[in-house]
Image (tube, rainbow, N blue to C red; front, side, top):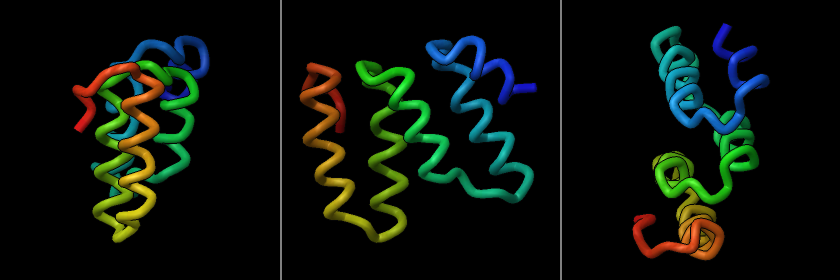
Length: 82
């Protein structure tokens, strides 16, 4: 149901973390695909970028996390992404 909601309302930012949490509770870790779709639908949202950066850092991809951080500050047009 959440997947359909996201398709019909991709800018409803609350749906994305809900979907990720449901997957996590079901034993499926949040993945890059979900976060990539989230960022495509909400590129200027400074609340979503940290989740993508954290995911990359937790998986040992520090260079990618650093690049995402730089990109996030440009795209979201804010220094609040950290």
